[in-house]
Length: 65
Image 1 (spheres, one colour):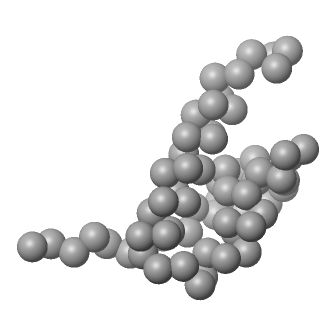
Image 2: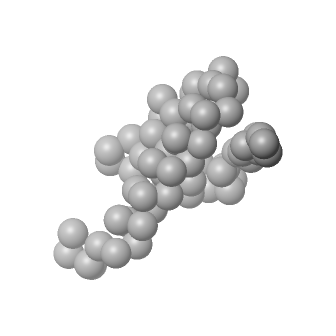
């Protein structure tokens, strides 16, 4: 049985929060960024999935949204 690998931080050095407190670079919330190092592997993977979905939604918004 293969073990799930340890995820890398999604930080891309674009550390700026939008109006809802979400980093425009990595898609994580301020709280998710703060607690990253204390999370276990599964918690980090969960954050990565959530952040990826946020980035997808941001990229699909129109100019007036």
